[in-house]
Length: 447
Image (tube, rainbow, N blue to C red; front, top):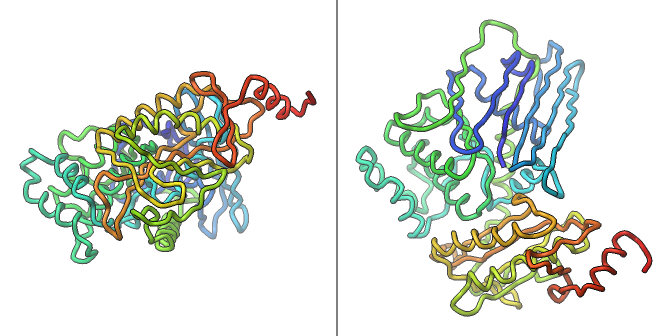
């Protein structure tokens, strides 16, 4: 999923502006202060959330925003109109979609659901997002260290990064170090989750010295290898850093639009997210402890036994996904969690880095065979770290697949043509006569 383009009319400092973004890699918005970088980011935020617009008190006016989101052959356009004729502002939005593949919700709605997951990746990173992550496991620290291995310009900074990643203390870190830790944590979050959404990094560069800026760009580039990145900065990019650049200049003297983006909106979003994190500070996946949710029709636990965890999970993943897709309960989601016993006790699944990559690949390949086709954005494959108290256990995970319950008038089937439905006891494979009866029931036709 990525932002394809945005068109802005009479918003912030822009009379007219149209930008097209590369779907992967880094899109760098470069310009001095007051050139409109944050207002451009705000136009995307307002389009997605329908909030964050503000107006000057003494003037009237009208602004329009058009944001196009793409995922494969599908695309969705969000049209936003903001009117300042009186108080309060009047904001209206419409969504146009062209879907070559069947999806149950629009991309913007899917994106908002992903952002509601406090363990998932972020869409926006700014100074308000800076945080000190929990101490990282040794394997994560080694992977980060390998990214910078061989770069002599970073040789003095690497030990500082290693110490900071191991540290439990939030004190004595510069703003630049906090930014770096936030970027590193975001990279690891995205790698573990397997979720691909854009990343917007706003106002980066001013807090770094030269080696730290090079390291920050290296992490941003790493994210760009798998996801779209939109980076705003007033600072020149480092030599050799690859990006599609858009240069903004300070607008000539003009009153600008009466309507602009209220940057405090992102601050409020970040405060809300941190409050949710604080509420859920207890680690949900503690080795040998009871999971916080009970098993139900919409939440299935599976313990993985034997020496082939990838085969065990792969053999059942598409069956459970199909069963949930065919279940009753529109608006709900189905969850399958491997690494939890039937009694709810967390045992985890041992998966090395190579095994994790292989697991995501084989599950995705299997789910792509489901009929009717299931868009990759319709489900999530999450690998949750298992903890012992506050220490993350190396290579031990709970594997979760989250899928929406669509309740369509047709039935989904696996790549082998098998049709399953969800039951309280697990899942049930339907016989041909049962498939016919189920379809008649959904179309409210008496047999």
